Image 1 (cartoon, rainbow, N blue to C red):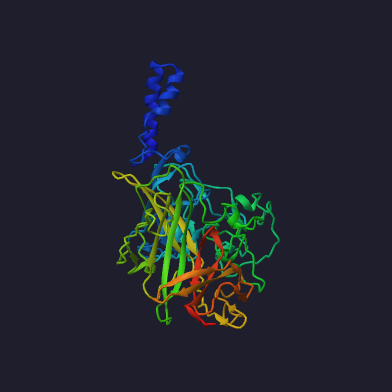
Image 2: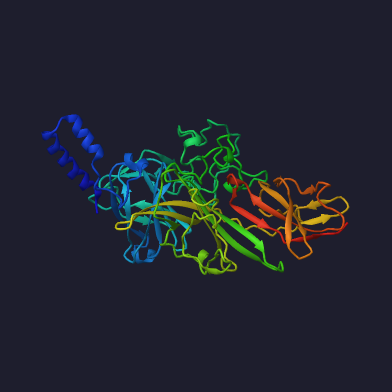
Length: 496
């Protein structure tokens, strides 16, 4: 269904009304007339200015020319300014379509494997200069997109008929058509950045730049937005960077990191947790999905995009209110029972137990979907990308003489390997005579650059039994929400 034709019909109807009414009445009529482009439900007020939308068709094949080779892969149309996406599965003929795509917006395209690992970014080489086009606008709704060619790391257009290339470009440093941000060999720069810094010198301050470091990888999918490094010279992932976009403001003090969106939701993220099993021999692994809707946004359902068929959630389960475990249905809830905060507060969540051994990999995408309408449903997709860290176990120790907790037995090899950009938290429990445990102390977050912490002298009382654990977690990207969280086993505190 192509909505733009319905706008034409409405315009013709308005001309008829004009012959019957005064001009001001026509304006009122156009404002009040229920748009035939409705979304099987109320139009979102914040989207009214985005104009007409349509179903956009396209095709893709690898460089080999066999379109069937990409069957089951996933392709995303990503709005440059908001990061809100449309997603589609590629069929056995290499065909796909994006429903409800706005014709006036500027987009890029990303390609994912069936397990939703990022595999390619739109990068169309310019003909007469060493630069790459990554963004475009749709020229109209009556023709499909030009064919896309997948070249291993990039997608290029077979031709550019039916689209307008957006003027933003990235330099082709190696002259091979591959943006430097999608290569293993990145040019590293460690800069002291300030609020108005323009790291890529494109005239757009980091604060509002959709590709802060100008490396050709949109911030939404870039695991190091500002291309900075650890003290050891390693790339510093955004999840361990307190100022991921390098604008001089801590991420927790602004709504400007990759998990925030200007429309539909305030923020959306996935959190990975490792919790030791009962005997401490291995870990239970969880993904906690959580997002906050913007005011007056009321989708019919909030879920993970159902086209996803990847192994991360294979045999995943959730625990119900009565303690029973059931397979996860892909839905998130705002019921106060789903790691979502209070009931009906606009925060949706779900804590999902993963199959033994499953862990999110590098560039693993979690697609949150807001679904509207029932007769002709449409949706908005918000993408979250994991950086692929594989945290180590936390192995603390306790010195009863000094009441000192050592966070990790090997301080030279912390849980997040390359960086001290994380925090430790200590929780002390008192064990009652009936075997139950009650938390009696939680420390403040302690910098990962510290290796020891002394408990206050009023925590441990003679004649009582205590245990403690240490939690290592990455830095908050939304206050109270860290992307990685690793717990130690419960350890005994010797009796006084």
